[in-house]
Length: 145
Image (cartoon, rainbow, N blue to C red):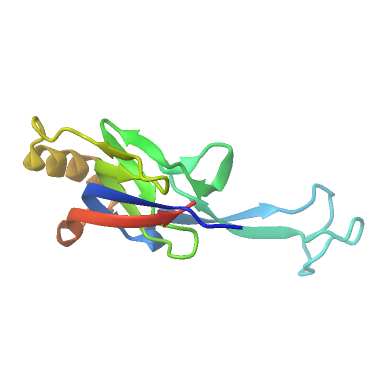
């Protein structure tokens, strides 16, 4: 068993992971029973209510609502999750990437305007109440796969 790492340079913003989840409460079974304070269904034994956190739109993976949709999210901006145990989430323009097998992908920064990236991020994140000026910059991210 081995672990493969990828390093990424990203011009963007770190998002507050706690603001990217929405608590959800759903019925655990479909039996028509009175909700008299019990935690489990008297017919099937399943929990009456299931509570979990769902990733908010537009960052949620449609196939798995509890997971982030990594990749292109808005215009040229990509969502990057550093790793499953680190739980740091970034949104921005990926400038370069070095995979574990030493392949380097470099994006041309010739026509990139930092102010334009900042403005796009701000316009996209402010309605979601996720914009934080202090978290905008050049990020070096290491993630394992």
